[in-house]
Length: 88
Image: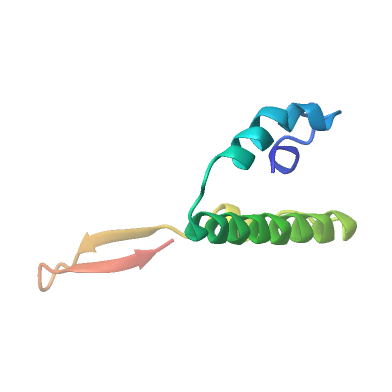
């Protein structure tokens, strides 16, 4: 995920980077719910990566309509004194 969030970030060049983490996992006891949570998040990260790769392959452009959605302003109605929605 760090490479997805920071494409210019430094790459992990060796599995030695993970040695202490792997040792901790090997020696500790984790409940099944932890592994289910981890699997769920890994699958989510994979989906995000797939979407980003597909968008990059299509030369995706941002949707400018989403960048500046219409604003809703609430103004009191002159006749009833109640608020009403005004878009614009």
